[in-house]
Image 1 (cartoon, helix red, strand yellow):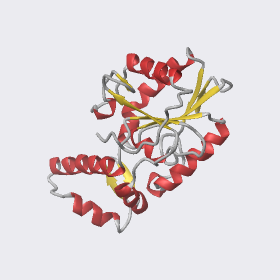
Image 2 (spheres, one colour):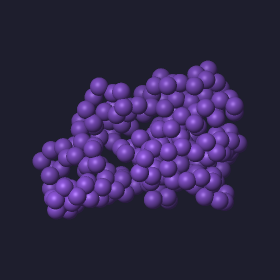
Image 3 (cartoon, one colour):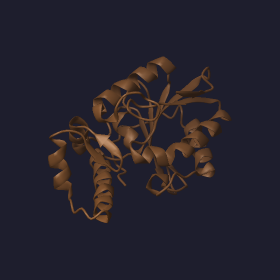
Image 4 (cartoon, helix red, strand yellow):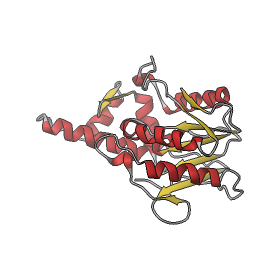
Length: 224
């Protein structure tokens, strides 16, 4: 894990988006960590098992394993808050820690996007398949969706997964208005992107709401 200001009073454990969206948001998360320093916010981003530098296989992971990894990382980093993005909101619940959620989504939405991408890729190669084909194959073993090897347990979990109805959640959307920050949906881009202005706004928004007593329970009210 990369750690910024590890001895700051406020220490934020960042749960990145999942699968392809993780790669598209990597630069932005680094920009946020840099911006957060000026607000005296410590932060670290978690490398989930099976991702990035992990020696474990992605095909052996599921959401429960990732949730356990989040809890362990929160303890080791002595996190005071959680910041989760998109699919990361599915595994961000750590008892007693307030959560900032950016553009939360449901697991089924992520799975559908991965399947659509793989179906298009297969069509370009002359293979005609549909989602039923992949659901059937997933019952037999790991399947490859958009370059991600997903095991049976992961596919099953994603179909019904949604953000935990935690007691202290502050949901942040992309747009203009209350609890919104202006910027672009980087997770939808074809290639990794960055948005320094949005990173600065997110850091400022979190710093201004650290002690907000209006944290409320929230589910997947954003699903794009």
